[in-house]
Length: 305
Image 1 (cartoon, rainbow, N blue to C red):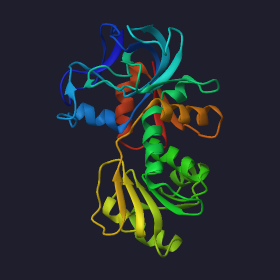
Image 2 (cartoon, rainbow, N blue to C red; image 1 turned 45 degrees about the vertical axis):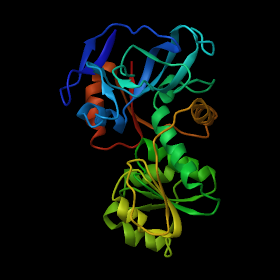
Image 3 (cartoon, helix red, strand yellow; image 1 turned 90 degrees about the horizontal axis):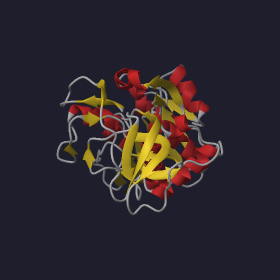
């Protein structure tokens, strides 16, 4: 099969021929049709995840996947060949990935069936970013009428988080530059747009006493935390813990369990949640997709297998 791999930390990504994985006990083999680029992929390629994961070279890129079950391993009863599925590659090691024609994944975690109304391209971009967004929103538990700042609003996680917050009746203050970025976040439901370059003044103009909660997906975490009301809630997907007395701070490690994936897929299939795909690249263009991701994007960069 074809896969996008790297042979050592920081080595160029290349489309290579690899053996088709064999699903072990409790695993399903998925014929992949779509994936997408995430920050996790950059960290994996750079070797930043050493210690957290064992690397099995050559490592195949891609944390997301969507496709069709091709084969099931022993002890699998909840999935069958032909099932349309999506999710997050939740293997204990870094070796297999979604930028490949096939991937073997655990049947018990990180995978769910694709409901009618959700195409593979969007499903393949929903797993990791959607989970991080939903976990972040749940962590700050916003109430209707509250003001929530989303720092890093234009990326895959931010674009989904805005919509989840709006659905809960929240007033969203989103970071974006004037022009296309501002139009993008307001199109997703953000009420106010602020620029990182003048963050404090612009947020205070909207919420003089501070915001009730903040999602730190990018940017200066200390500056973001400093804009909370006393007793406000803060969560970070990049594991920043602010030194601000009196606030409730959490960090997010995405938990793509079947229930979370199912909730996201249901909302996307019903049209209540938009998966914003800025560009979709063919598998042979996946190295370019990863490079383009580093320059910033409005929503997600998809990969067509």
